[in-house]
Image 1 (cartoon, rainbow over the protein chains, first blue to last red):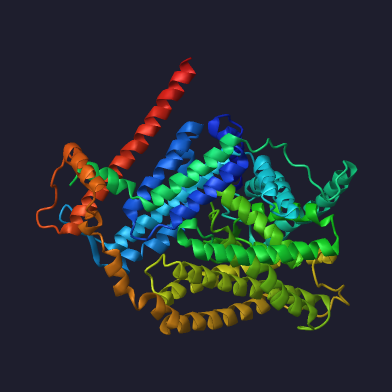
Image 2 (image 1 turned 90 degrees about the vertical axis):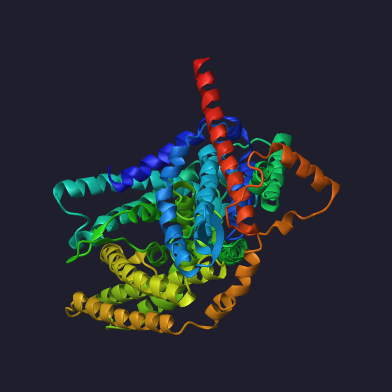
Length: 267
Length: 350
């Protein structure tokens, strides 16, 4: 499977997950979007040494993953993209910040190690939250929610149209790449002689296709107003969910749940 | 260069959202004023193509490695800076939402680092001036030379600016302990090499478009004639050397002269440590009825009473309770997973 086929597979997988039904899927997309943003902001706002305070933030995504029935392993597969840069930045912390911060079993742990772990956990938690949002909300509903939040129509329509064409283009390029490699066995990438023509030909065809697409959109009555997915009203449970999430995040931000629980068993 | 949410402080992320959002607003206003509704599907299809095209590996002759093309420069050369910028926003949003490449909160910063520089700086300060100049002459060959020059310069400079912004945003967020100068010295040369390769690939694609449909490119006038033969390889080689020398010199300068920002961020670190080390038992020293009751409950529930390391101080003792508490949180998380699995199994059986 080449890189593009993998990307296509990931896209279809997300669409399939979003099409499932569960209490989390049934929530209003605006409620999910707002709570996810709130979660990410609260998560990244923790102090770089506050590992103990940050850790309980794990409970929210884990709870929602379980309620929604979304497999955690699918989410962790995506960590391969986000973790390298976070790690590259965080890996230097133990080298520069060597002041001992805590003692674990007689071994001193430096501030750098604590801040590195905090950084990595933040990266993982934020990814879990965004993944959860996309795995329980179809893109059409998300776009409708974005319009409700007054994100400019042009940008939202562009997002929706591009998303639809990403699948088409990726599939076409995957076929082209396979065909190229079958004719150039043992070659790692596209040879320098075909650098321009390989993508260029598809680019020209696609721009013509876009004009035809616009023509067909007009024939179906498009006039600068795009019709998004029908979206149900924002009901009381959605509002309560958003408020409850906000309150829980604030509580976790200002009360160290780990220390509180630990305090019950350790003096 | 996609930044994850964890690399940004909320204040920095919000600032970048405001900057990118304002630029997007201005771009939308300009596109609406131009009144070209047919541009929207063209933008969408081209953005989708660039998204997929960035996954193609181009073999770099003479080396075992491969490169990719630069989306921002390609889009602004084809669609113009405003439409290119909006298309890049959408590409970055899809990468972030569906592929976890970048983060939802870091989207504003990523748009600024990759789309703003690539589209606006790349177009107004590099592509347009070079394409409208009479550099290399007035014939078709000269135009090809200008396209190659603009693509390479555009990709290298905008990528350098983007990489510098990543360093600045991460340092201002207080995420890394890596000194500002060392971080710059690490990021800039890597992106110099990436920029060169991206520039070459982008110029190849743009040259193909120029040969087939020159009217699709922004700021390209119909050529007056074929003109004399000129080796593009020579142009590229000269450019590569110039960029390497200038870029290398700049990054050396940046690393050997850490500036005031570094001092401001890291010079007073000792005070910060002292504050952050304030994990002593005073936190629990509130004398109140509630605290006493909590203490009584604690006495009753504590299965590790008066537990502390042999020669540890108060800070370590407190951290033990933190660690045990975190382990309990992890236990709760595992229990939630187990309960979820149990209920799903029951449901499947029913």
